[in-house]
Length: 248
Image (cartoon, one colour):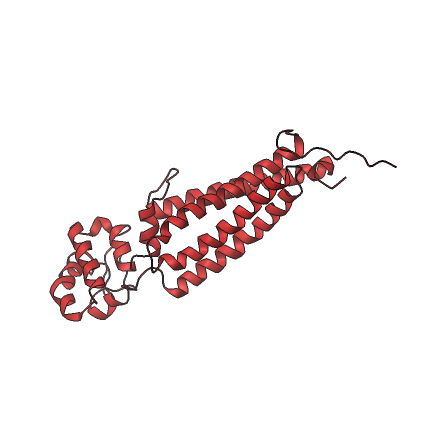
């Protein structure tokens, strides 16, 4: 008979149950944190929209800030449109002086200034001239920030996912169930990170990020929950039949 989680002793089952439960709690906590960061809310379980994903991975940092964390300081939504059009139109210095500089002076430079003494000022992130503003107009995350986030994400989630998926591989569920859920979790993880880079250049990949993120977190939580169930309870319609003893 093949080894399954049900062959473990009670102590091992307790240990795995606690580990899997901690993964579920950690995954849910990560989803709460990600939702709050992307939606810029302070509490609750916030579900990010596709627009939130686009803001993070596609829009230039300047536009993203004006739409989110700095939105309360923007005089008018038309200012955001004007900045977006300036960036899309080539970011000329002449147009900056005519249209963008007054917007910066009205809502940004009082805090984003090396000499600012205002509460919450950001002197290390100045926006007082063309060159300083231009530095924040490239599409999406910088390559450095993207690479940093991607490798931390892959190493961190990959480490616990290989443990969870290996544990799930030894459950007594039918092979097609195990294989489908395991493959879904890994494909979703790779697609999620890959589309961070692609969304930087093409907005439609933001939808893939949303779907892949949901599939990855859902499959991880599902594997943990099903493995805990299999450790203690047999579900006949999900598990494969016990092998009949061989004759002789």
